[in-house]
Amino acid sequence: MSAHESTAHLTDVRFPGVGDHRANAEAASHNYRGQHSVEVHDLYKAFGSFEVLRGLNLNFMDDAVTTILGPSGTGKSVLLKHVVGLLEPDAGEVGVFGRDIWSMSERERSEMRKRFGVLFQDGALFGSMNIYDNVAFPLRKNTDMSEDEIREIVTRRLNDVGLGAADTKAPNEISGGMKKRAGFARALVMEPEIVLFDEPDSGLDPVRTRLLCELILQMHEQHKGTYVVVTHDIETARKISDYIGLLWKGELVHFGPAAEAFESDEPFVRQFLSSGESAGPLGMD
Image 1: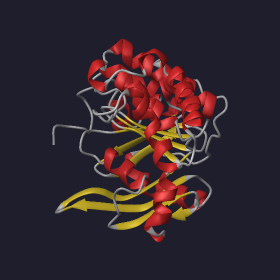
Image 2: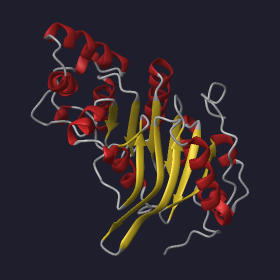
Image 3: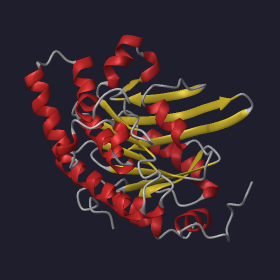
Image 4: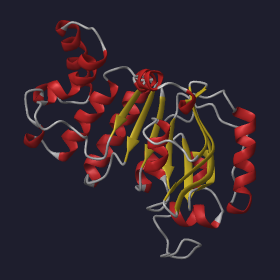
C-alpha cells in the first residue's frame, strides 16, 4: 500500500481490463471533466505513420502521486510533453487548471508552465552553471525577487534534497544521483502545483533509486501538489504511487489506486507488474 493511500481521494471508477478499457476511460472523462488540475481527453498523436497516442483519456488525481507505466515506445514521455504544452495534439484536449492548453495564447501557456516543475531523466542541468545557479535559474528568469530572497529559497531547496554543501560544485563534479536531486530542487523552486518526473530513476543503482523514492515521498508530503511519474521500474511504482496508470499501444489499459493495480487479475496488468513475466499478452512486437 502506498504511503499516501490513507489521504488520497479514491475514485469510484475502475479500469478492470483491456477489453473494456476504452469505455471506462470515456466514463472517467465524462464524470470528472473540469474537476482536476490535469485532464487528458481523447488525445491523439502520431509521428508520420506511427500512432503514439490513440484516443487517450486520463485524469490525474490532485494532491497525489500518479505513476505512468508501460512498455517502451508506448507514449509515456510523449504524454508528459503534451501535459506541459511542449507538444500539440493531433486531436483531443489537454486540460490544465480547467482550460485546454491549446486554446490559450502562447503568453498564457508560458505563464501556465510556471505552475509546473519538471525533473528530466538526467537532471538537465546547465553545464556552465554551478548547482546553486542551476537551481536559482527559474527564479531569476521568471520573478522579480531580489538575490537575497532567491538565496533564501534556493538554500532551503538544496537543503531539502541534501545538497546544501554542494552548491558551488559544477554538474560534472557530482554523481548522477546528485544531479537528479539538484534537478528536483530546481523543479520545486517555484513552488509548483504540478510536478512531472520523466524516468527519475533512470541510471541509478537500487540504493540511490530507493533514496530518490523516499525523497519524492517526503517532498510531496511537505508540499502536496499533483505529482506525475513516468518510470519503467516496478519497485519505484510500488514505493511511491497513490495511483497507477498503464499505457499499452497508445491507450490506457488500466487506471486506479496502486494497491488495486498490484492485485489485478487482468493478464496484461499482472504480467507487467510482476517484474516482467514472459507469459502474457505482451510480447516482443
